[in-house]
Image 1 (cartoon, rainbow, N blue to C red):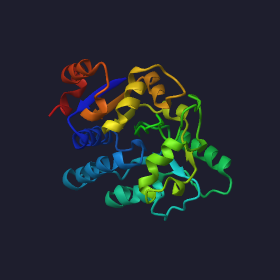
Image 2: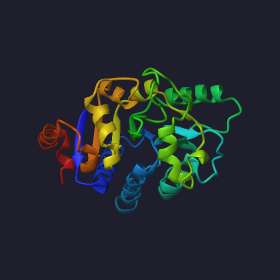
Image 3: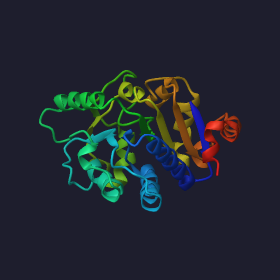
Image 4: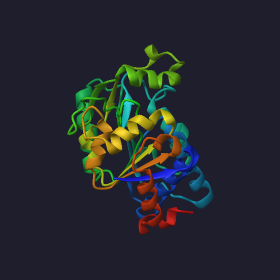
Length: 263
């Protein structure tokens, strides 16, 4: 696992966008795993700017989102389909037929989860998976105690997650859907490369546990320590509890891979 520390939230999001753009330019048919939430809005802002100002081309890529709330239709402003359309898909030259999210309105949720897994496989697997980390340590909606080999499935959301998402639902955690479809930890770990973005002091403790603590189902994001190509990008507040901060800074300043991204 590599860790890159940036001065602030915007710098961290901009670096994530530049890394995604780098991979998309190298492989225009990239299969890109996407995430939602407040942390990601700045990433999508920068990707839209790269499309507008530098011609970043999304026309041949395919996308798979990590999760979707159960019981929200795509047009609901709280759905993740609506989020993705608003923040990215409607603003770049992507073919929406090549953008995929789980169907939270599917009459047979188990069949929908199996369909989603199969669609990822038949697309050749995910080349680059973008991730956030929840205050409970979740990636996707893989809450504490999730199996580290889990696949796409229906999942109940824990109280910490309901509180975290309450501001998006008028501040009332009781308005947050109680269940979601999520890619499993095992599904995520099969991505060829993972890119996790963490910002804000409220993520400092859980980021420390995920990056430098033991691998544990109690902190699902810690499973990323097992991934051969996982990069964590954090702003200074999110990184404040990391014990190896200075080593991570030295690696970013000296590894040849990161030279194009140091300016």
